[in-house]
Structures are given as C-alpha cells and as structure tokens.
Length: 162
Ligand code: ADP
Image 1 (cartoon, rainbow, N blue to C red):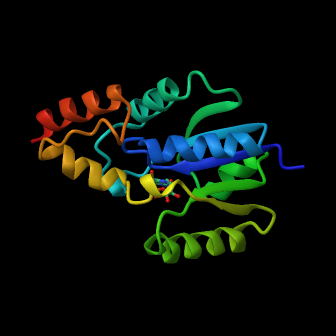
Image 2: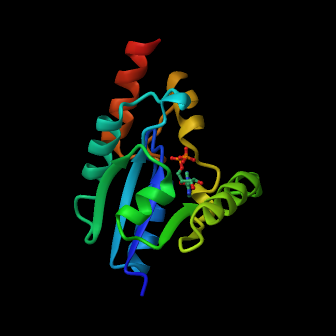
C-alpha cells in the first residue's frame, strides 16, 4: 500500500548518516522522495539548490530515489506527493523528544500520514550536520562522515564564510 515515502530534512550538508537512512528506506519503499526543506530560520550554510545538487550526486546510483525541495508544511507536501509515510531518523535518545513532538503534531495536522523512524548503525549514531560544520571549521578530516565532494564543498564554503 505504502509505495511512496518522503524523507524531509535540512541536509545541511548531507552525511553518511542521511545516505544510510535513504538506503534503508529504499529497501522498504518503491519510491523515496528526499525533500530539502526551505528553512531560512535555521540559517543554513548551503542554499537549497546546493543541497539538492549534493543529494542528487550522492544518490545518482540508487534506484527509486527522487530529490526535491519544499517550503510548505511537511504533511501538505506529503499529501501533494501522494505519500502516506514520512521517514525520519532516530540517532540517540536526544533526538526522541523533538521527533516525537513533530510526529504527533504532524499526525494531528493530517491523521492519514504516518511517521516511520529508522535508525542508522552505531557508527553514524552520533553524526550530525551541525557537528560536522563545527569540526570542518576547525580543519578536521571528514572523510569517514561525508562523501569527498561534500567535504570539499564544506571546506570551500567555510573559507568564504569565516
Ligand atoms: P532537520 O533539520 O529536519 O532535523 P537534518 O538534516 O538534521 O534535518 O535531519 C533530517 C533527518 O535525518 C532527521 O530525522 C534526523 O534525525 C535524521 N538524521 C540526521 N543525521 C542522521 C544520522 N547520522 N543518522 C540517521 N539519521 C540522521
């Protein structure tokens, strides 16, 4: 029944944790729409276009993955895409409260759409885009956290910003 799922997020920038989740979702659903949120209040480092391009490049070899962007309520976007499932990731207990609140709010907004949580392997369970940006600004080697082209883009962007 649930052929199509959406995986919304900031992906600022995408990490191997996000890619792991995309692959897990791909195993379950015939189509997964990875949707970059327009969330200017979060002051993203990368533009929506840059984040979309990075996701397209990282998933080019994967079947059934569509990359898109949205600037509406996630449940409205899901309805428009005829998707009944929202995929989110749970890394640690610390994700739980926020994700739980958001899932229940979304259910109240549209009871026909379910949020499904997937978990990355332990090795990515501490990985976050926010932490990566901090580590990158201090010159850390990010090769085990993000694809090489993301690391390059991150370092280039931070050189401009700092
Ligand atoms: P958002 O601003 O929507 O939280 P993120 O890009 O940080 O955007 O995360 C999108 C989703 O991916 C969230 O559900 C988050 O928990 C999940 N996620 C982020 N990093 C990882 C990771 N390392 N492993 C698994 N899930 C992750």
